[in-house]
Length: 199
Image (cartoon, rainbow, N blue to C red; front, side, top):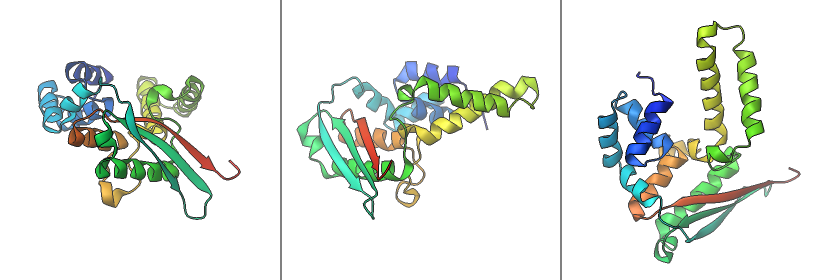
């Protein structure tokens, strides 16, 4: 499998405006070829979704989910551009589904940028310690790999939806991009709150 570098992901993002995860996946599928990856993003509707990403999203919904047993509850705000889409059953279902996912997966933040620097630094220190006995020339790659794995676990947009049967292993970002392409509007997962009894 071709290794996807951060530089290639940035180049593709600059070219298409698509999300980081979408760019990474497209580059992996295109075996590192930027032109092919650009075509893939366009075919998947990601490039068009990216064009809408700058559009203001001032409408939307707040959805809730209370887990059986009433021990975990979630509120999530998902925004779009028009009231028409905010009332769309598919959009509302996406927000509900998202609240259920957050209850189960317990993300720390919506995006990577929202992860506190001290949390990231702590994970980097742990990964560095764990890689200390490995050859020096591979340590940085090991640390980067462990950090990315951790971010996949704690960043909402990078998480794989917990309902594998329904969503076939897609990430929340892929599902968000799909609903954005379907509705032809900028769809933004604005914020969430996850409550646990005694937590």
